[in-house]
Image (cartoon, rainbow, N blue to C red; front, side, top):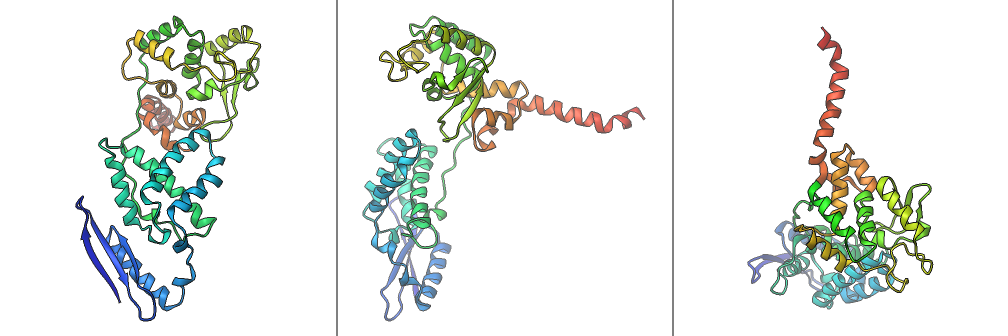
Length: 356
């Protein structure tokens, strides 16, 4: 018969520990954060033991989380983008450090929740909910691979019952007209001859910093006015229109390009892109702009698009987002455009009524 014990952690969180005892079989135990999950597991486990299913899947008892992380880092992570490799390696090593000795069979939702909350508290410096969710996402994908491809876990990942933390709405910081003029003037006077063109490109296209800095001349067709990004954060190719003032700058830049490198914005050696962090920080300080990062140029481009009538779907396509959720933060900026669309529709369908 299953028994359920309740215990309270130091943080005041209740944990429900389940024991399933059947004569002739070893006792099965698991811990859960919710009583309903504990009862469900007890019922399913008891039924599986009686019907002979429970002990047929022993892989989870033979592998630890440490083994899972090591195999994932070796076989799966190398196929992701460079930024993903760096961050997810750090994230997965955190889980390995704190839960590496746990057998996968003992990796219950309650155990993960306990360490999720520990992760959030940090070591004297709390982590943001968004950061904690990124750590959870890294572990979740590794466990999903263990279920679907390696068959180290039965049926489903324990992450399915772990709640993500609520995140605030995405940051929307964009340059006012006056700030934009001051920033461009500061960039124009920068000791870096490349900063001005890079910033104009970011404002014109909404491209990310490294998407711009990694560009080669093979990626840019000045005559056809298009930039083709070979590798983006979402690992998809994307084309950006090269128009207006940005096109003029790129034409001038092409005429004075360095012949010893194919990079459009090379560093001193020509082998790596230029590092503009110091020049950027100096320009921001000279322009006296507060609370503004280079990535906010991307937000500025999206905001300008919204305020000039672009739909959320159009903004999403230009910025390279896979879903509309990422661009909903700009919805309030396109309210005037939405209102005009509805007004035109109403005028069309109700015009005859107005005439009467």
